[in-house]
Length: 92
Ligand SMILES: [Zn+2]
Image (cartoon, rainbow, N blue to C red; front, top):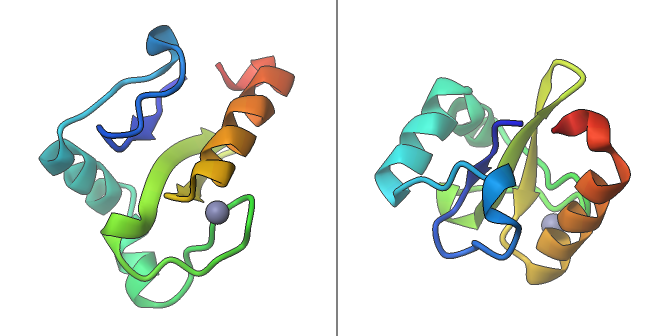
């Protein structure tokens, strides 16, 4: 599984995460067109549905079913993500 995880959120097991520098993370978001979609108000946290308006609000990005999903920087959503991937082994 390839994940983009903000460097200060390394709470999950290392082997499942490709940790990146902050610059790499921004580049990743650009390449996945998350930044563009964010400007259009089309990026929402998978777990709390909050609309994300800046890269700084993004905690995690991950692929699922051919789409890119975003998790916000709220620790509760990070925890929900950890549980979610534990329940969906097909994601990694
Ligand atoms: Zn959230």
